[in-house]
Structure formats: structure tokens, C-alpha cells
Image (cartoon, rainbow, N blue to C red; front, side, top):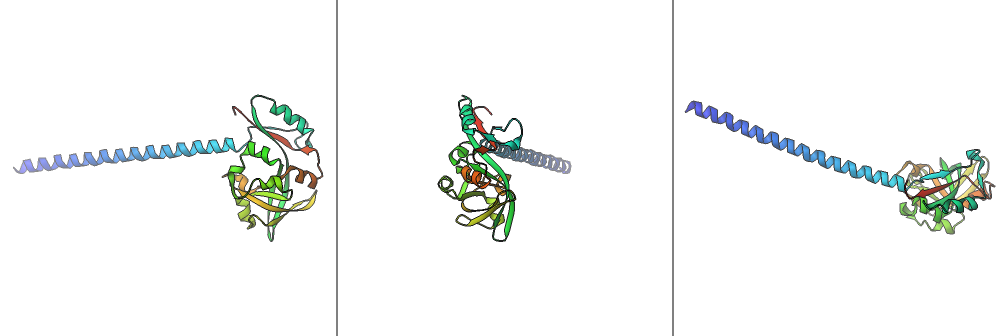
Length: 216
């Protein structure tokens, strides 16, 4: 009897250990599957957001990037006549310092046609404060990223100052704040194309034409 009890104890103990081992492996597999699903979903969402919120192709001047593109309406119409191009946007890009009260930051400011830019960059869906359409209606309006707004401690309705060594100072009203979930949120701003062309004395000139295509 004594030997039987010892044998039974070992058998039960091994069965219990086997059960817990199987349970631990099963739980580990479940955790791995869940994590892989989450990572896959996050990766797919990140790729989709990056592709949708970025130009697929950007056309610059043939000679020098800083030379600018003239007669851009003609080139834009040629680009849009291409069957694989779904949207295009002409823009003027400049570097400047943006200031609100005692806070300043270096930015890239884009002068754009708001409807065209939204077709390429899908900015309207990224607006978290203000109204994207106001950018088209207000020649003195500016759209900034949420990270930049936090750094400057400013919100829609406030007036900021754009400073450029070449052009001087320009006062603009914050009409909206966007959150793209990318680094652009801390360093990019948008104004109307005509506003920036007048400020930098570059009427009839743009930096580049961005576009979306059917198969990026």
C-alpha cells in the first residue's frame, strides 16, 4: 500500500504538471496571436495613412529645385490629363519662423490651393480644431499642426507672425489645427498660394506639383 500511494502521488503530480504546461503553452500562443494581430493592424493602418496623406509623385523644375515652376497651370493640366493621375496640387514651399507672443519655431510653410491640396493630402479629415474651408475663404488665414500649436501655445482665432529674411513679416490668423499623426504636425503650416506668392514676391511661381496616382 505504501508503494502504491507513492506511485499514485507521482502520477498525479506529473499529470498536474503536464496540465499546467499545456495551459501555459496555450496562453502563450494566444498572447502571440493577439500581439501579431495588433501589430499587423497597426502596420496596415500606418501604411495606409502614410500613403493616403503623402503625395505619390512630386514634380520639380528640371534645372534646379529652387528655380521654381512658371506657367504651372499649363503643366498641372497636362499632369491631370494623364489617366493614372487622380489628383494634383501646385504649391509654393518656404522656410520661415512662426511666432506667437514669446514662442517661436522654425517651419516649412506651404502656399496651396486648399481644395487641390485636400485631394492629395486629405487635410480636411485631419482637422481637429477650426474649419478647413476657411483657408480658401481667408487670405490672411493659416493652418498649423497640433504639435506646433502646442509649442506656440496658440489656438484658432489667434494671430501669429511669419518672419522671413527675404520677405519680412506677415501676420496671419490661425483658422485651423490638423493632426496627421506624423512629424509634420510640429513643423508644417499651410496658407493660401496667392498669400505666400504675394508675401515672397513670387507671383506666377510655385515650388512643385504633387500628385496622387491610381497605383502608387
